[in-house]
Image 1 (cartoon, rainbow, N blue to C red):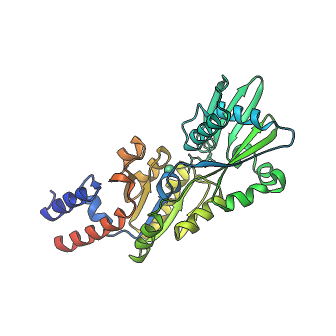
Image 2 (tube, rainbow, N blue to C red):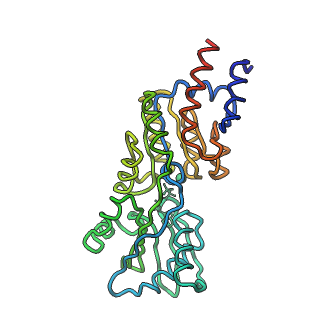
Image 3 (cartoon, rainbow, N blue to C red):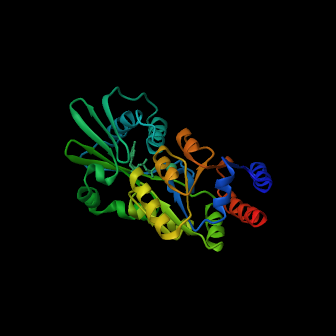
Length: 292
Ligand code: ADP
Ligand code: MG
């Protein structure tokens, strides 16, 4: 049965924009030893903007953009949506017709247009050695600026890349600092590349980051953190975060996240408000003192 102290703490939380799906989650939060965050949409706004387009000398940039947008138009990944919006604005024309689009979650998309096979996504998808050596390693600098690189391969050639920059939320750094001051170890888990992850982690002042995570890799790292620290939280917004949210001692979803994340989480942050987490930990500690 829920005790009066936790009941009043839950309603207190709701007033402050934190939704607890039960007293046990609130109680656990007070014992939090470590907390992991997804990057895109959680620490960042999740609205990446196209900043650079670089193609091989033999490739026409307009054709390149038109084809990439045509394919990405079939994906609902945030990167895809940003690319489509950018190209529509730049070219001001309708996109091509295409079929045979294949979604490869965690990597990107593949498609066939006029007998040409296109792969659009991360370095793994197009082949890492090729990705790294593209135009003498030009992507390294872009990634170290915290930009995400989308690689585009046509048949056997790496045709070009797009770089997109997402913005770290204004409140991220303060929210992380507060948790660190409470003695909680902070971690970022992301599907993005190492250099990009490193830059965003530095900007967020987060203790540790792990890049190139698939949904099951996130689960693996949550398990490791639980073995090492005990009570571990996970904060995320996407379908790809749901298994990790379920694995954590306390799963926390961003209120504007996908339905699956909201359903899986134990706690929902209304208005995506990261500083509420430290507030909720304090609330829980207070409540646990009253109950004991
Ligand atoms: P995250 O949300 O952390 O970026 P995802 O699992 O959604 O993780 O994707 C992992 C990586 O795969 C992305 O960072 C991106 O590089 C690549 N990717 C996935 N889908 C697409 C897409 N539609 N277009 C371009 N790249 C994609
Ligand atoms: Mg996300």
